[in-house]
Each structure stands twice: as structure tokens, then as C-alpha cells.
Image 1 (tube, rainbow, N blue to C red):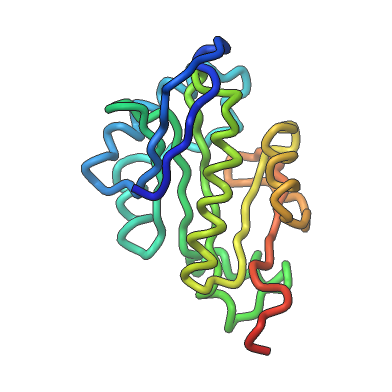
Image 2: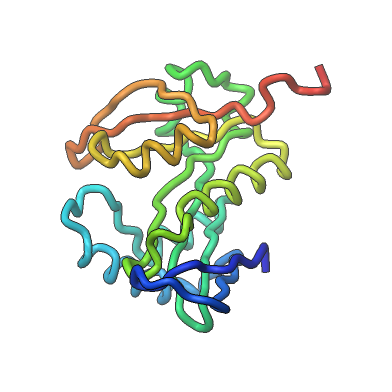
Length: 192
């Protein structure tokens, strides 16, 4: 387990004594991720905000050195997020943002975040971003890149509140305009 967090509400009703456990996910949890994706996607007005990941895509994330964090209440996955290592197709984008070729392998690309509708309002998206930042720092990564749809104000505010810098806008492969943000994890590195 990575950490534990007390939840303040379930389905917008104040609650006591409900705790969420955050942990790394592996292939045995991918069915939970798929189930959560379906539940979250079905509850969204704008389905373009959330990119689907199939079993093979999740496995590739983990096998290539990325990670997936899940948040469970009991046996139910209520939120999750992932970080990928950049692929060669990301080199041009990262370079255009000022990430050197040397720092390419020292970068994570923060992927989707999903929070079940019943558990929204507990700052789970923010907590998952904090955990990804902490893990990246513990691995001495220099940067995290993340994206948010231009009309997803809640996600944009969470990202900016964590110290990410807006860099540019770009359409993804589905034609959705997204804001691209970058965070330098060690802006004044003590080793310099």
C-alpha cells in the first residue's frame, strides 16, 4: 500500500470512517480498471475527456517502466491514474517543450485519471497527482508531462495548483484539442 486517505463523502453525502487505500496496480487488477473506465465513461457528459486503455495498453505501461496507481475502498477500485515512460513518438513533442534528449528517459507522461462518480469531491484526482509527483521524484525523474482537454476546467485547475506550467495546445489523434503542461520536478537541483 502506498498510503491511506479518509474520505469525507460518498455520493455527495457526508460520511465517517470510510478509508481509501492507494496502491500500485498490476495485471491482476486490469479488470478492475476496465470496469471503472466503463462506469466513469458512462457517467460523463463529455466522453472525449477520458481516453480508453485496453488490457494490452495497461500491460505495456507497466512492462515499459511506467506505473498505475489504484485507489480502493474495500474490493472496489474507485479511482486510478497512470504514468507512462515516453516512447519515440513523444520525442518531438518533448523536445519542442524544452526537454533535452538527455532528459527524455528522465520524464514521465501522466496519463488518464478516473474517479468514480460516487466518490467525486474527495480530492482523489489531486491526491493521485501528488502520488505520481512523489513517485517520480523518488525515482529522480526530472519532468512530468500531463494533458487535459481545454474545456476540462476542474482538471486544469488541479494541474496548475500542483505547479505544472502550461506549455501549448495540441490536437490528439482523435482531433481533441488538449492543453499540455510540464512540471520540472527539480528546478533548483541540489546536485548542481
